[in-house]
Structure formats: C-alpha cells, structure tokens
Length: 68
Image 1 (cartoon, one colour):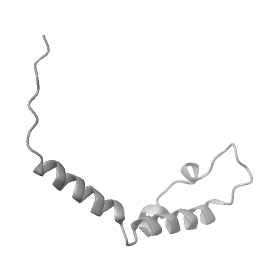
Image 2 (cartoon, rainbow, N blue to C red):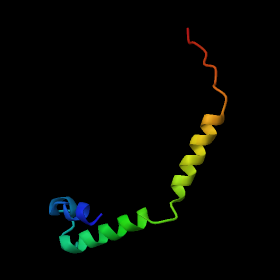
Image 3 (tube, rainbow, N blue to C red):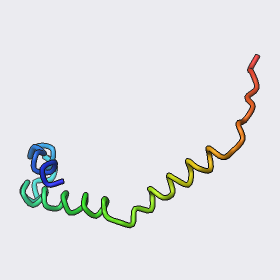
C-alpha cells in the first residue's frame, strides 16, 4: 500500500481549486490511512457479495420471452 500511495503524482493528490489543502506529503498520509481503513476487517461488503452470488446461483433460471 505504501509503494502505491508513494507513486501517486502530486498533481493527482492536489485540487488546484482548493489552495488551502495541505501539501502532498500530508495528503498522501491521509489517503494511505483511508485506504488502510477500507482494507481492514470487518469487510462486510465481501460477505454480502458472496451471499448475493450464492443466492443468485441457487435461483432457478428464468425463462425469457422473445419479443416480437
């Protein structure tokens, strides 16, 4: 994660319309912290995606009617 965030160009991190924003090193730290939070457990969306996939797989196929 650190390597990916370090590779981000300053231009991608900064919003030119917001000059009051912190400098890129601080923005990188904030982005890294946000990414780490998103990657941390519990990852409820993963369990929900697995459940939805299982439920969809277990449903009988739907017969489709041809349009004429």
